[in-house]
Image (cartoon, rainbow, N blue to C red):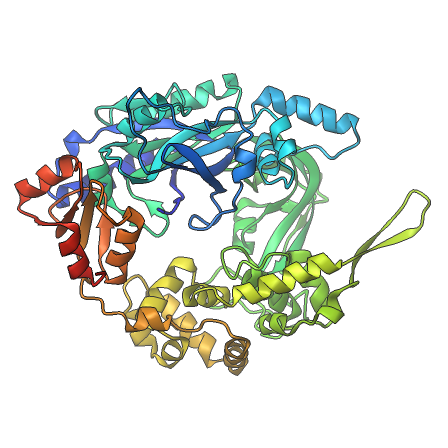
Length: 614
């Protein structure tokens, strides 16, 4: 399957033009004429992204977006949504493709959202903050009857991985979806040039209030799959698409105080505590303030009336104070010179805007690092949430991420997590139950199978995100090699600069960190590329393949695995950079294009010999 990528943002006409100039430059460098680029504009639905996989025409499975590569299986609940066909609508005599993955956004119509919240309030149940949360909560319900009772719907916006289906553009994919019974927004448009694209984005912003579903932007995509392939992807963002984000919602409230949160790398982050206010349909009482310089630049003071916005309609931020409403009692804020968690004297490294706690034994840093370790994009340890991490640390059961693997069942069952007071005024403790403990320990055991690059990311090395962790793991095939590498050797890895290299060296220079790595190794975690990957020859390093038609014995996914295991890459279209095209039955136009360009065409047998898959 292909990852479900995120999108880069453009917040105004200038940023949209910048995106357009960059892609035109890249296409020109690849020998393509930017004047021939067509674009598709569509709404950015504010819902829950899902992947639907149709196998031989029937809905086989469905999952949430998750981290883009691994999501949550929600097939049963998705089957209850009437707007999702259980089978593709086929013409008489038409044969369904073996596999078609459809991407879409589940949403709850606004009128239905209002009714749902009224019903929940009347029943004494907590209401949902917004339609997106309501849709996500419905799909993630363990009981599919709950999802079935709510009038959820879907807009489909992309065709992902396919077998036996040849499409050459995004627009043709949308038409195919429509023809086969899947809901595609009727106001999606194709533009033969960039003229009018910005105007259409603005039109979506203007019609936003008239829609019965939430949107938080418009998406612009290059139509041609061949051009998309040439433009490629940077990190998790495709170069061929951009999200035009609408102007954020704003409201005025009072700043009561500024709290300090200590992050896993020691950064002291100021958090605004405000009188609760509804912004864009969500009640907001906290907002990010970035750093002390930003607070002073905006002249934000404790006690001010402030303008609050939800940037991207998600993260609350303070835009600035309402100066004319000041009384003179407002207080200028200064970052503390001691860490609020451990009391260590704080430092502000030269050239940085962030104030830091230098104490590696700071309780707040330890807790935050463990939270990062168990998070979904890192080790993905189900049942170990942030509150449980805090409680286990508070009780002295963990003081390091490696301690998680030493937890014993007898110490966890019956553990008091919190308490509440019932209607009689009696304190009621809430304890860990046997089933929860068993699930947690099972998930910890399962996490030992996570690949090396996930563990590397989970360690929480400063500046090393999930993509950088993969780059480092591909160059340094085990953690000992990475720990022994010089800063210069690390910086030589493509995509890893001197800043990240310095962080890696600093991490492994700490005896405490080296001991943590040793303990994780003893616990059985993967700290190297698997033996199968390590020993496998990579004779096709850097070679680009295109698959077309139905192969006699191999599925597309198996062919892709063979190519990638041998070091090659799979492309969706034939171009100058293509090295081989693998030809199956009923090939599309790609075969003819390959012949025109003089590319090497392989049968399945020839392909198997080349990749070592025979």
